[in-house]
Length: 321
Image 1 (tube, one colour):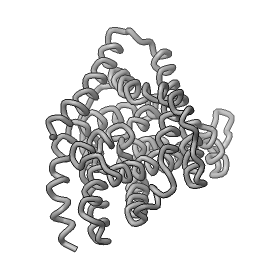
Image 2 (cartoon, helix red, strand yellow; image 1 turned 30 degrees about the vertical axis):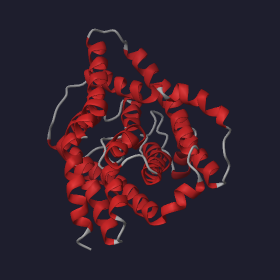
Image 3 (spheres, one colour; image 1 turned 60 degrees about the vertical axis):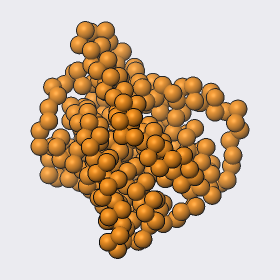
């Protein structure tokens, strides 16, 4: 089971990332071309993927397990903000760098690896779809807007002495980004009970399919521009992503007596490697690129070992309460 996950899901990430790395090293891509690639993903492919995936859900699915939704929401948002705070205060990064760090380290890549990892373990079921849908909506429609808001709040003063963005201006600037308003619009459509026509999805899916592959390729390009390193901060980021975040939601779910299968699904989804969207944002704005790319590479490798650990320990923790 885990051999298939490693071969089918984790290994391709490194292969595509190394292709991007090699492409940059042989100068097949100029910096302008790399930025154009990031812009295509961030402004077109990723918003299309988020909109399509979220609108395929429905209001009944999201409200089908209210306790799971509440725990996931509190866990993801809480750990995202904690990651931001630690990066800013302890590792002494700027607000913008801490925001990008939170978008990478504080959010799992549910949209890309959710079904690929959970289906082989738990089987294809309504509950699996529920967990992936909830976690993906929270990661993309809640955390990305928060991250962009913090990035805009941390925008430095201009050369003419203009002050950094106010809260209202930061909100307005973040809402202008397609990667922010597209998932928020999709959530509003779902909550209103509106069903999008099936004829819409083939067009969205065609460009959305480029999202994950190009995002990982761009990560390789970004990795080639910086010196890869595994220092104390990278180790902390990987520990935060692969172990601390799932531990918090595991304890919360067990405390509130979430069914063991749902608890295991939620914990494994939360333990997934960093969100590729965060790395695309990092590369697009040239913020936290070195540490972000290193965190993604190491965390993805560690996931091959952390996933079996959480599948083993979660039922044990669930029986403690």
